[in-house]
Image 1 (cartoon, helix red, strand yellow):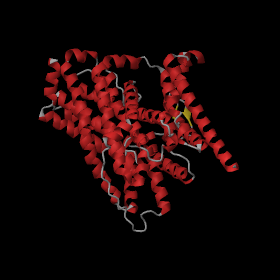
Image 2 (spheres, helix red, strand yellow; image 1 turned 120 degrees about the vertical axis):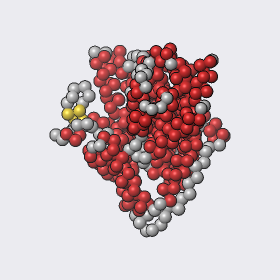
Image 3 (cartoon, one colour; image 1 turned 135 degrees about the vertical axis):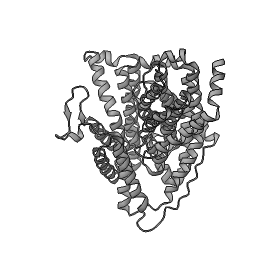
Image 4 (cartoon, one colour; image 1 turned 45 degrees about the vertical axis):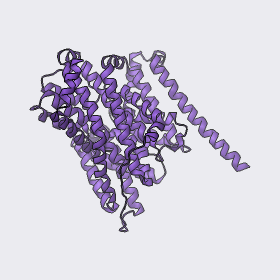
Length: 500
């Protein structure tokens, strides 16, 4: 108890509170700008933490991580340009809601869901870190494969009546995920003899291209904004009422559990958590056909999950010294700068520091509520700009963001190519979301399948009959069959009505 009191006194000093608020603001702004993210922000800030007290420096980095994970949803909702890959799923329903004139409500749902998801994961991280880390380490390749397949089954729900188009879009995404050097054999695949494609299709510029560039080209064809009309839209962020949150309680709780659990799994990350959170929200909904049209559940599901993954990802880092995501891998550098080695010995040698980090992340998620409102209002002002001006500005930022990921022009060309693909998808009424899901989850699905089969000496029984993996796969297959049945039932009813 004395350690908790000492940690509370450390965190609630004005200096540390300032660094936590600063970190959340920096992370939220970086997350909202396409191509920038919390990983980049933490990497840039590590040298500045060298002169700080370890607790202050690590609290700053953890706050950037929390803010950056949420920030991507702002641009995803307002402009259909995910600022970070983990916000791509948020745009599926966030942007359609904004197009209905409910951008403020959409931002409100995103902010509250992010805060609640983050607080839940930090609470879990604080109470049961060592035990959860051990559970996460029991997951092997078959379990990763089952999780990926469960998320991919979302494709069967996103197409609605046009399920065939959704499957085609998903297959295109899975194909794009195979481009580059094979991770297991080092063989070139679909590179067409060019070195540029050997690194594969980076999904961040692909997401930016498919959503942002595709949207810009579609609006250019419509002639929107060229007539001199202004988008005279006043966006005022509106937090949901308690009654509205209670209506979403099961969505938020389910996604918080999913996000925390996914975050604990080393190397999986918030992007996968967001897509699985979204897929389970659709799966449990009584009206899955409404998703993609702008429903609150479609925002709360992925936003709760991806922010819950931040606390989850810190669990293996702090307890075992194993990074749970790309950003936590960078945060390890912050520990090393101060001569600290993450792992179980830190709880013995530096208990006050560990509990200070727990409390700092809790405070950071509360500050995120205010930072989110401020940054969302700032970015919302851009919606008042005529689209003939705003479109090229988004285009330039998208290109700069895509180039800045690896300082490689190949990523810019990937952005352009996926932008054209996104434009044709919109033109011919193909859903973009299944393609992105296939691209993001394709590598995890393929690699976990091949490595898992290698583990079991290519025997399907031991691979599929593992308790956790088998259960997840049965649920996934059942979900697809139910969606197919539902579609055929609706078609049958429609045919009967026409006959009558």
